[in-house]
Length: 227
Image 1 (cartoon, rainbow, N blue to C red):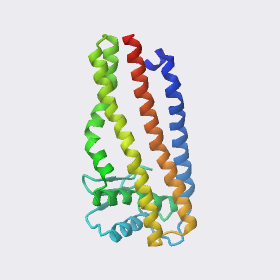
Image 2 (cartoon, one colour; image 1 turned 120 degrees about the vertical axis):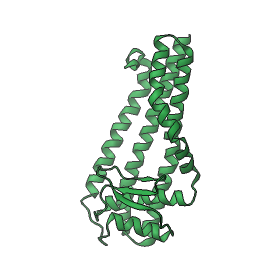
Image 3 (tube, one colour; image 1 turned 30 degrees about the horizontal axis):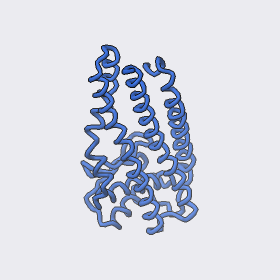
Image 4 (tube, rainbow, N blue to C red; image 1 turned 120 degrees about the horizontal axis):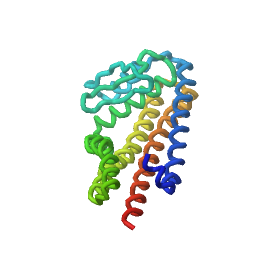
């Protein structure tokens, strides 16, 4: 790990790493806690998502099951909402389903940050895969051009994490509003949903913090090599 040869970069990376660990603990503990708490209306996660979509006039979104705990997501390319616990009546499952339905609402209404995130996905994936190999090769062979390309490519990945933040926060706000408006959960349960979604949002904040810390570390190392 090249960071170990540049101790000054650890000052940036360690806090971000600790935040990421805390965020993962927080989301898993909150989800596990409220996965055991059923909603008073006994509505399933699938039914909640369907009702939210129907209320918004969205009829072209499929709902599928994904065999991955906390792997829930909305796929805008296939207009598919995938839920890990579609038949659960728990507060956690209903809240997560509502959040993913919130992404479908964003897509249907042309929410700009979601469109931007979808557009930069290929570049971000390409950048995250090649950035560090090119950067490290540039350091080894003292090729400044490779170092710079690595930094530019990783910047695209950082941009993706930053654009993701408003997308996720907005989806959670839409979910809370939809659940309240449709009366799918009580006010007390809405507080539990907020806790689960806030914990999930923290993972995206931690991801962005880690990406920024890595980018700053790359810039520090490049600057030190040039000097």
